[in-house]
Length: 238
Image 1 (cartoon, helix red, strand yellow):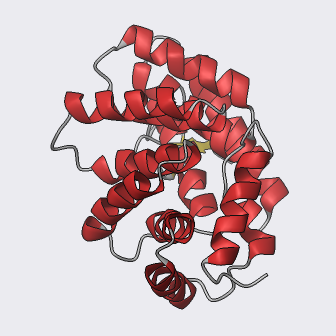
Image 2: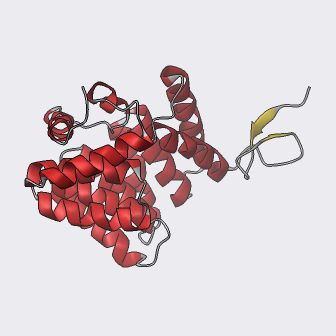
């Protein structure tokens, strides 16, 4: 029976059809678990976390000189696996290899936020958008900006960035969540309720009790608690 492994096109292949040592393919396969977690699609959390870790670690092992593979793997290890320190280190290494990696600066902004450094996160998101002002994944930086300003206590500014993301992706789970939370703490109760209602249309099962399954590995527990309290004020059920 032929050996199976991850291919460059993110599919499972057999010997002779693709390179089993292609780091970018492992990183891309690992990144699939980011969207699964962020969208609430995880079925078997333990199994999927283990697989994300295996793929990301293999990408790091094979791609020590590949900035993109290292950056993606580092982000997966932080957000999906919860290995915050190692993931942050791999992202920093990626940015040393390629200081012009806009996506990497955006990903490192998220990590800075999870580490409890929202102002540094804002700087990194801004740098990412300066490097690639027409980037097709600008929404990734806009989400991040909204979160960073939210945790820095700048709720109106957070809402500005959430609205920008929602203009591009009006059904974005992440943008609706942070938009609703920002409205709640900015005293914009009607808009908070409206965004929460839309969020529940998209994800009727979402509850305060399940929110933690979607969030990143915040180092300081008061941060996810603040997020949950804001969404509670916005009308998200317990």
